[in-house]
Image (cartoon, helix red, strand yellow):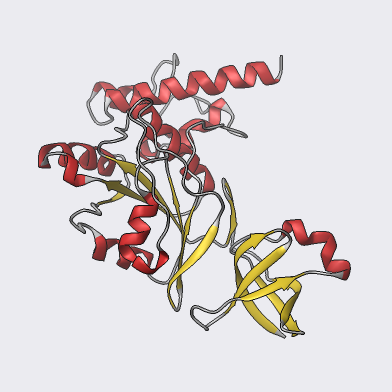
Length: 295
């Protein structure tokens, strides 16, 4: 019996790379009892299989470390969330929404700020400094100057990594920078709407070296917050955590309650007002969603 990792799934076939054998893949399928669970096999799954007539027959799925639901991919060690300094320019609300989704996944997170060649050093320092203050690791990159290439490669080593973020920020271009052999399609940003055109159509793992994989994922601009109750939102703000415990009320959502630790931290300048206002904006959206859901 052989073991391998699913790197691509399409049309009922699964392309599996044998563990420890770089840059080879076997076309596999399922049959019999296993066929009933074919739809549950995900890219990133480690599977057992045997060879028959030149193709692999999958017999089982090895227990997963985790599952990332957007997109569906298994056994992820690192989530790289990519934004661009310009073209498209990020905003606080959009950044906050993506960060909350990333925090919800409970997967270690790295932020990459791309296209440093389009802005000044002051602008680079302002945005990267703010995100580091929120408690995140940040790498600044440019595919034009190769800035951040070695730092990013080091962060990905030995991991299964998912690249995610808004369309047009340069996820595929970054992957081409760190591993030119990928030759992923890249697209321009629409001048009319200020968003990227979708160039990634499906989830696929790409192997950087013998024990490192990355996944380029379809960009998306509409973000749905499923399963986040209003009172749980604060848990996905790492810079709020030490102040959540000093609120007078255990269920404080940092809105209108008295003696709120987070609101006091905002008044003291420890938490930025812009960050708190982004939280309130998202809280209002989630509260409205819950009202509509249980109306």
